[in-house]
Length: 354
Image 1 (cartoon, rainbow, N blue to C red):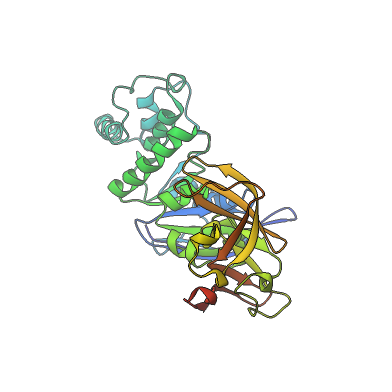
Image 2: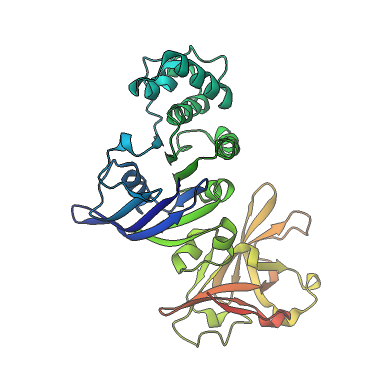
């Protein structure tokens, strides 16, 4: 199903939840609605489902305006954060529920449920009740139930929020494979950026009711269009005055230009680890945090505390140690524009307005 949203707007009392949001989703895409809690993600999803009515704007499925259609007439499947399984029904009956409501034949119901049980890895659990299943199994039942009536659009509200970390990681890969096999247009809400980056074809960043940016995970990470996106996706340190950074002294003028710098854009080490010391600035290690595969290092440079990573294969640094710091690139912004800048001192100048 091709989805188009035009100028969607929604208030809850005096709270402006969704502000003039427009986007298109191509048939078969898996889209992640990503943003902080309270940003408007679930409100958008519920309006697509027909569970909330927009104050203004249009929702168009496959060329048809569906604003006035009831949820059951929109051709959607909805997976709730809480699963919303029927406790008194078996796995088989939970999956079959939507088909029974549509008065499908018993033979078709049996065939369809059997197919979905196989597809979702629930074979052997058909006669169990929800309380006899793990969290991951209950979520699979919820997916199967949503898919049973063969919807054209699958909507998922924080689908993995109630599941522990290990099972959540497994289900991400499983969901991605399932959607590809079924070929259904899907939209899922999450506040977990790792989840969105790993699972989605494209991500829509929602903040304070606005669509900040839509694009592939790679494009959004490498070329954020707004300070909100740059600060929300990935880890970043905000610098109030970009010109205080070594190599960025002339960028944006002396006042009014801020910078966001991601850890992977910063290189830290001893003097003998750099071939071009003139591109580096002196710093002092403040704290080190062991992350299993690497160190997370906080280093003070010119009165600013930056955060970066350091490989376990390199010499282990100590708190209080003097080091050299090279900022490879920074995301700069002011009230008028934003742009990514490479440090010209390291011999590869690049400035791209975005």
